[in-house]
Amino acid sequence: MVMCTAPKKTGCVLLQIRQPADVLKLFKLLHRTRQEVFKNDTRALEAARQKINEEFKNNRNETSAAKINELMKIASDVEVILRTSVIQAVHTDTDKILLVPRKDLLQDNTPYFDKPTKKHQS
Image (cartoon, one colour):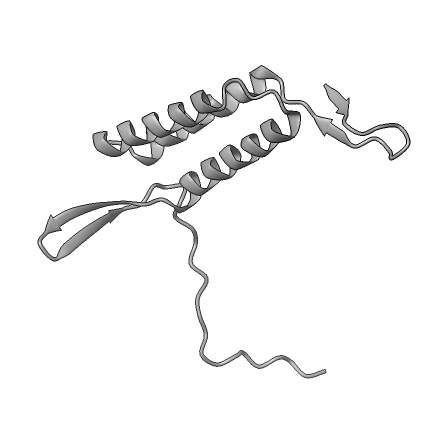
C-alpha cells in the first residue's frame, strides 16, 4: 500500500506502508539467522532471541509508515551484518582461540602480488 504524506500544493511524498506479513517475515528471518550464526552457543542464542523479541515488542504499536520503514531497514541491516560479519570463537586454551567460520563466510582468496605483472606492449 502507498500513502501520500504531504498536502497537494507542496507535492505528494510517497511512503510505502509495510504489511504486517513483511514485518513477520523479517522477524522470522532474524531468528533463522540467529540460529545459524550462534549455533551451539546457548548463551548467545538466548541473548539474541531476547533482543530480537524485545525490539519487535517495543515497536509493536508503531503506526507511522516512515518510522516502520526505518525500523524495517535497521532490522534488515542487522540481519545482513549478523549473516556476513559474525564468526564464532571457542577458547581452547588460556591463550588460544579457535575460530569457527561458517561456510557462507569463507571466500576464495585472491593472491597478492608484490610486483605488478608486466603488460604486453603492442
